[in-house]
Amino acid sequence: LIDLGQSDEAQTHLHDALAVFEREFGADHYEVAVIAGNLGTLAQRRGELDDAARWHERALAVKEAALGQSHPEVAISLNNLGVVRRRQSRLPEAAELYRRAVSVLEGGVAPDHPTLAAVRRNLAKVEAALSPP
Image 1 (cartoon, rainbow, N blue to C red):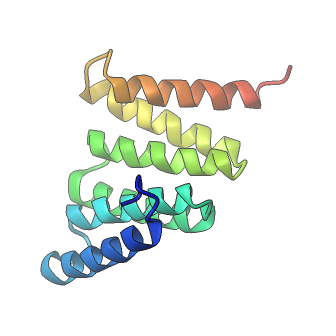
Image 2: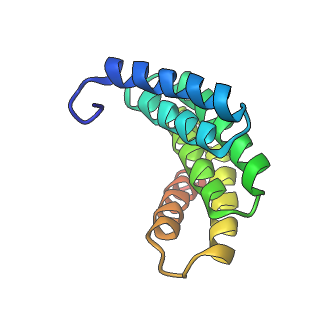
């Protein structure tokens, strides 16, 4: 629905799914984190960066509680929140989130994993922006 330009309908369905997952599995279930992350990405695409940050923070917290801080899924949420912080011009925070994501992924995926490569690129962009000319 999002790719079809129907973001309002997508948001409605995601909120409905979130309510079901919270009721059936509890607020700290992994599937709740997945929906929260999707809502964060949707909010980000709509330019609603504060909402996006809140949803990605929730996804991160639930994943850390459910999976542990060193799980590769946690790194995905760290990266997603980093992207929002970068778009909010909160570069030091974005850099720290990307560093944490790299640290998690370096221990859990192959050195040439595409997600690790993407996070490293994101980190390099932020570090370049933070460095004096």
